[in-house]
Length: 492
Image 1 (cartoon, rainbow, N blue to C red):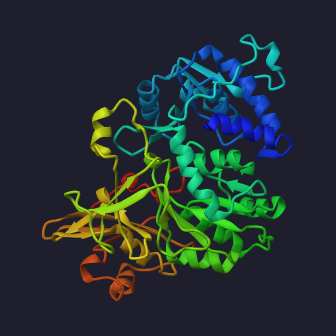
Image 2: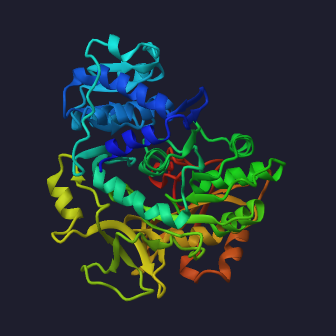
Image 3: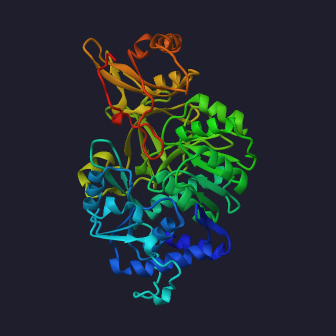
């Protein structure tokens, strides 16, 4: 079955049940199907097989638009409105997007670069399908190998890459997550992550539809609002990234909200400091479940489960996936040795849009995806992420992972967050530099932080330079964007 067929089946089976809630209200599965068919009849004019952009906030309309395009067998391309105008213009051209579904809020951003902007907030939502000029749409359920969605990975310098994911990719990824966590139609999910991020798309758009659960979308993250939703809506599952959970814990310290309904909280996208993991367990009386993934894998590669987890790891690979750790020559490494993570299985992308050479360089001839991430498998099969291949700092010929240093410094009680980067050094090649944000009204010196690291890190891994910042740049999911940190002289 395709995602389209799963959607039609879910809307029929759970017709009267609440499907989606956002800041403007709720919609049932039955009403979601009506809205999707109405939009599909309007979108018929784009023609079959066309790539159509979606630049929308988390909302009922975003989900209805996505499935409307699938019903027409058109290809949804999610656009991150937080990208620069130049990057968005690149996506419009690269994906051949003549039309983008959006709202008036993004008019100034999109109008100059898009031929046909369809403003959903200007439509008459009560307009019946039969009165639309294209007439009622006949659902096109398609083939499981058809493209289900295209996401663009974003960097701070290079152009974004279009990752093409099929129905099989998404569904195989989901099937490996349902049983370990006992997901069911009784679950009430909460997500502040934007749907243009594949982690949110798979877990909080495709998954609820697959099982008939209810999902609450937040347009933006707010710690107090998350706590309100958990208490008022009896939320059972939430998805966020580490920086959001850290902020949530700060809000929870001064809150008396009833959060007893929450049975599962999952995070990914960036390493989670141990102080956040420990504080979450103390505050909410449940573990913060870590996982690992990337857009090219739809996205989940590994995840801890409630019955089988190891803190400080990204869990075990999904049953449908093979994971191995390789050296720079592609040879498989033994357990507990750091190397590049390679992944193989049905969740691996179809390829990069319009980039066959890059696709061949990224996916081997026998189907292994080179992730570019560094990690190790332990003797129990748990995956530990230790860094990004491009972020590795080479100090006097030694490979040093910034994550290890960040984890140590994040345990300092006065440190709110930290980013480690390598800076040039005439003697050693590179040395670590720490960009540090302190908790409000706190003060600490560079020497104090070096002393704190002294018995926790080898001498050469202790940051040579420290720079204190009021804040660090973050991406839409809260992940620190190291390449976007304004740099100064290493001696600062």
